[in-house]
Length: 203
Image 1 (cartoon, one colour):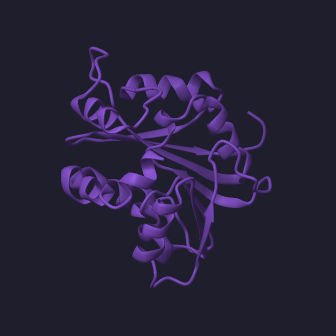
Image 2 (cartoon, rainbow, N blue to C red; image 1 turned 135 degrees about the vertical axis):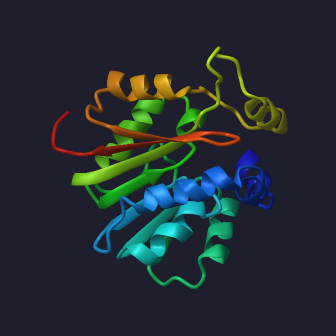
């Protein structure tokens, strides 16, 4: 698996190439987390956001399809005692309905075949009144062309199913019934749009 292979070097991107954006991303996501929250950090990678939210909430379930990525998160977050680690597929979480007060899925929605189905799966495990937080790198320029970043990682073996601009990302949420979603664009070398939706019963 590509993500198992890259787990050892992934942080060079997060803390090197795109450090400014990713540090701002951590701050933004933390604004949505409260001390009573049980949080799912889905597709947690090497724990960029797990590490940030763990001190702020009651419990975090850190999940990823890649066992190697999950091991990196365990190493990074070894000082925290409120984290559970679960190897899981974001497309089929095998978790109970309405289990979490906040559900985070960062920089993964562009990698799945059916991103709308994944949003619905994430919403399923989010409690009513809870928050669905989905940051995503903006991988297309305004002319609709793939960015250098996308071309680089695709050559390395990543499989991008879709690329978004800020406007197409906003439209994607609206078209799939997630009304009232709040968006924040974090500018930088590889910009990131943070979508935050509050679950209020049926859509």
